[in-house]
Image 1 (cartoon, rainbow, N blue to C red):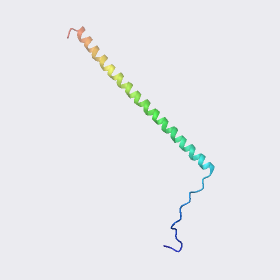
Image 2: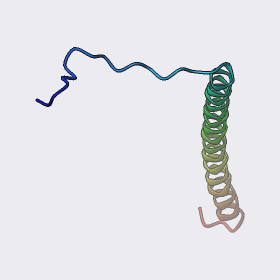
Image 3: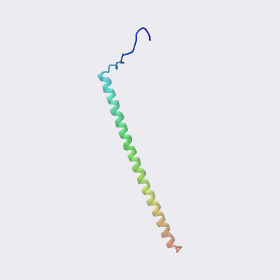
Image 4: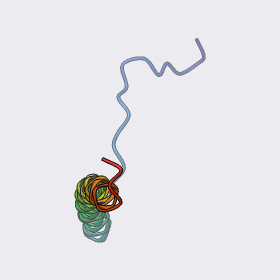
Length: 77
């Protein structure tokens, strides 16, 4: 312990100016907007992936049907 004890003293929060509160609120709002945009982009990406999978399955089915049709026309089956 030194000559003057610091025990029992609480740290005082720094004085916050109105502009500081406004800037902090603007940053928080911007962060929320960015997060909402990223969530929307993620959902759009998932939807596009799901659509691509559906299209891929339909293309495989169509290719199989075309193969069967061609085999039938050449009297292979």
